[in-house]
Image (tube, rainbow, N blue to C red):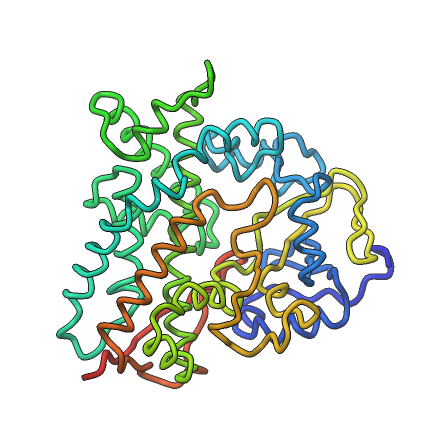
Length: 403
């Protein structure tokens, strides 16, 4: 199958997002790779099946480095620098080896099992404090009242940021993911980069036991992160770890409340929380598509030829419902312990996955223990999803906390 024989091109728009799994099920059954139109009218290729998506994550012909790609005007370096800080053009999310390998090596030591485990007691304290605040309220929005402040405070703790900026960080990062206005997203990127530059300057004057200070001090032989790399690395850790983790918590609560048997099973056996989080990441994870890639040469995926210089989306949300990979994929089962692609695969796998898992496990376990009779305030079909090509996020999540 080639470009000339591609099927009718669907549009990834608001209607598609609201009916995401059904729409992708139709496409996935028909073809492993689908030509699709974005809401702004651009053409992309979408990889829909698990085996193909998993292989594509590790395929060096699918590049994340747009800086020298002249055929992609929408993501070219010139286009990027017209709207965004130049310092953000080279990050772990937008580089290929060997530049990516070097940055990742300097960063991953900060997320060892021991270092993440040292944060557990602090995450417990943050969780308990936030749940105490909402305990007497009959109804709350789980996202506003818990998930957002929880993740913001944990990230501020990890990175050594002043938690008085939590609301600013939520607004800035939200603009990056959900604004359709390039001026707004560019402004938000500048605000985050400027703020992180101030943080780095402060940590140089007064180092502390936090990730920002560690990254300033880390060395690999004579190699170390320069000023631009410090800003871009902190930017990636902050932005990539914020909305995703918030929405694992939100989507997890929403999904569990739609499946009372699974809620009851987790309530009765809290040790299932680890496998429950993995199934949430598969069934209703926070990623619709992985970070944009483009073809450096012609690539055949699932028998479909994608020409050079094309934009490619890896639809992890579709791959996670692939019946060729998961028996009964539309059934939510917290004992499943699935392998999934929520944290990527290969050299670009998420460096903060261990921390994210710990955060969500603690959050869900404590929520269910404190509010075992929680319930949605309206039928699940009345809830709406925010429009985004990358993040699977509810607009609101109002619940009754119960007696």
